[in-house]
Image 1 (cartoon, rainbow, N blue to C red):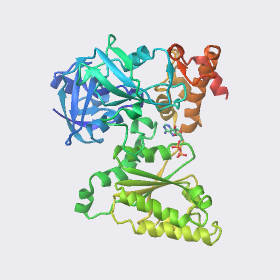
Image 2: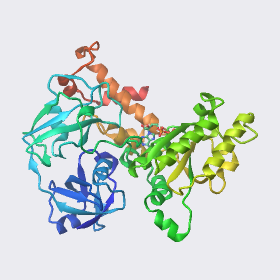
Image 3: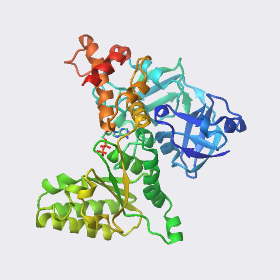
Image 4: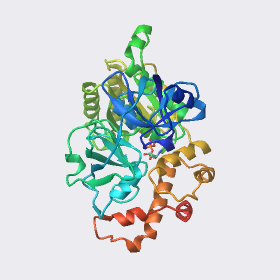
Length: 445
Ligand code: ADP
């Protein structure tokens, strides 16, 4: 059966789920908890566990999967995929490889089994493992675990009786299989962004559509935009969004920091710009992200001297010279849109603008869901409540709220921790939980 791919909601990502509405599930003769193979037009395939999705999808012929599964199946949002029941066996044992810099003392097997329980895995695959503590901790991100081998072989499901072994060889050295992302492509997916649905739609239409279907634009005789300007307060997700788009379309990603290129490379700024554009064109499809664009290209009256003028001129000529229309797109970000040199906002340059505002309550809740996704949260914690009480917080503030809460949980168990040691105790990891008091304390800041 053919279904259309859509993203999962933020809170449901990272668990190997495919949300399919009940009508389509019935047609496919599937039940909650069954496994399916999702395949697009290419060779890619992903195995997922079915779950009766969101009521609003009823009858729309949609399958919702997260960024990792989209990548494995080599499909994008709005693509049509075929969905078939999958033949998966329960795993007797699975050997996983941890990242080199994650050193754990004791048996982390049970914790891994617990978190991955119900997920279908195949040798060589990388699966995210939520771990909010220790050297790898950075909220919203998880530790990549590599499936080194499975018994039996093939695609297997991790169950409560699967034995989990930890490989002696770190993940980086275990070869083969779909790694997280090709080099130069960021690892952020749409499920890592909260509260910007409309803005994401616009970005996708301006960037993803022309990059994925250039023929549509050629046919219509319209030119895809070369530059898109994201503007709004700091910490609202502009960088995140640029990275997510690049990841979704497997585009090479180049970053230019406005202030850095003006100061660090003083005297070589133009050369640096040229090199970045060259690199992008060589690796197309590519996205060039220019952060704090206003520090490169402020209005002439604000701009200092010759250097600034020359750099702006260089940037304009590089953008004008972008040949592979739609194959290289420049995303500029600024929180001072009015300070920008108007020449940059004219046709053929940054002529599409999207405002990224401060999130509302619903947005804050989604952002909190993103950043607590991997955390062992006490059941009493109601994210809705915290979304209500964080008026004015932007994404970056909510991320630090989540991180600080986790740090507070860590402090509580500090007496049990051997802070001298570089290893973390598996038992300690298992007993960690973020509770109400930890979050309240973090809110006091
Ligand atoms: P900007 O580029 O707008 O200044 P960033 O995208 O760099 O902001 O955001 C900084 C961090 O704050 C991100 O890495 C992310 O962890 C968090 N963040 C910001 N906005 C969001 C959002 N909308 N959803 C989830 N996380 C967010």
